[in-house]
Length: 303
Image (cartoon, rainbow, N blue to C red; front, side, top):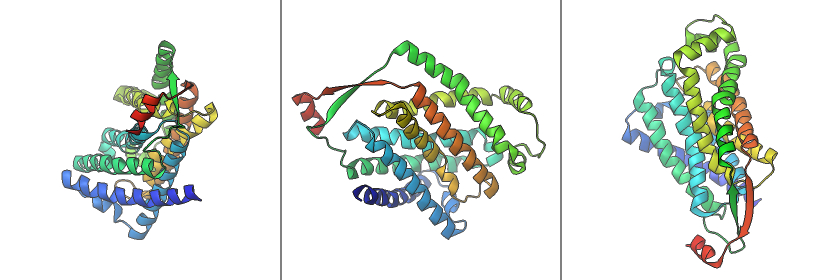
């Protein structure tokens, strides 16, 4: 019951922090971002609450499965939440802005506002769950990583696995809808996957996704290192973080995407994001060693 109350409270607080973030973002970069939430007002508010509920729930799921505490935990929650929900989504918006036609001020307002709202949420979530301080019963963990094999795995994930997931999901899910093809290419013609991939190489989109693959890994690695669970459990946690945080904002009506385009992208990014997160966690599984905190370490953790 306590965890349910914390989840409900954090869902409402996340919505409040989101509004505060919008106000700050608009002050720093004047834009029409407030207008993004005014289209069909009641539906927007309901979807915003649903989005915040999903995001708060998955972040709590991570916190309850993490072995780190204090400001280190708050910082990790901030990195993962801001990195996935705002930074990764908006660098892709910049790439596809020829189709989206989002004013740069709006993008900068979203990112800057997201920074402040995520900062508030991360500290609040860590505090409400009782993890901002630490206990003498707390057991310290050390994560061991074999550097060279890890680098090889990261290169394989970024160069091959992520682009494969991204482009296959884009073609097999999103590109099957004529509204998507019309929105991005200006035509409803259904080209073959190989023809599209040829264009992706020539346009540089493939190499941009390699770059994003590295960023995804850098963002989730600290969170992954802090989870002391089975590979499957780690995969579910990281998969849900990328899936929910990366796509739940598509629940909100906005003037940038028609509803069909938005909902298809929701299906595409939620499913591919979960698969990608699960694969990262499974493939980069790190061994964790427990060691009791020394008295000095306990005191420093408390401070």
